Image (cartoon, rainbow, N blue to C red; front, side):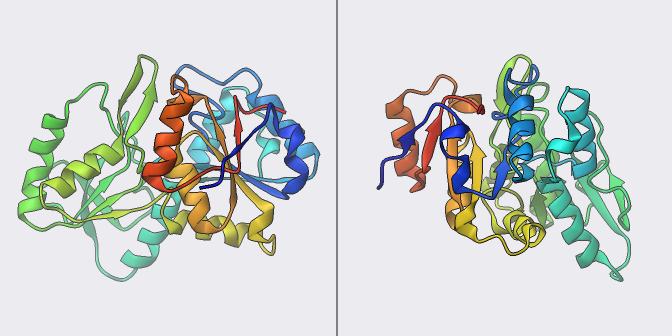
Length: 279
């Protein structure tokens, strides 16, 4: 495997690319708030004429995430689109459920968020006993245990109910530190014998939507920036994009040896490593 190049900031490499796919959690912000230079860096990239997509494994839809980031002090003019795995899934479900009759969905989300289903011909149910589909959009792993989720999901597995996971992240950042993410709940569903359709990074649907939005920009001129080797770097590799790994977020306390182990496990190596998202 090639060795990634260590750089101090984006100013050293931005001229190589016309578009950037920027992760949200771990790059722009964590569970406590924005990183110090993140908002200014987005503005600076946009001023250079770059196309910017915030690409997030959030089970919530794009608009809700975009509004939230603006409320945290980010300039909404500094990105062209906020594309989430929840938005990707919503568009897929809208197409696939059209004309098929109303479905009942057991939605696993956070803070009673219903946006993954709003506007669809789908009604929410609280029980896996009468659900037609399971949608895992977020985790409350800082409140509930995996045993709680197992008890909730076991009836769906017994009934062979399909499941969509719109947030593949297995670890999430909270105010109190890390907790298990929606991806870990989906892994549990599979371990119980269920079938999961994964939507979001590193899977192709979200990258295909990003490519469609960016038009005729060549893949080699598109660069993904993230803190997860498994999701951001491996997803960029499979899409044919360049990639930058930042050592904030889930890698904040990882050593160079830890990072190298992740590169080997996921067979994905970034082109560059930055200490944080900054110019």
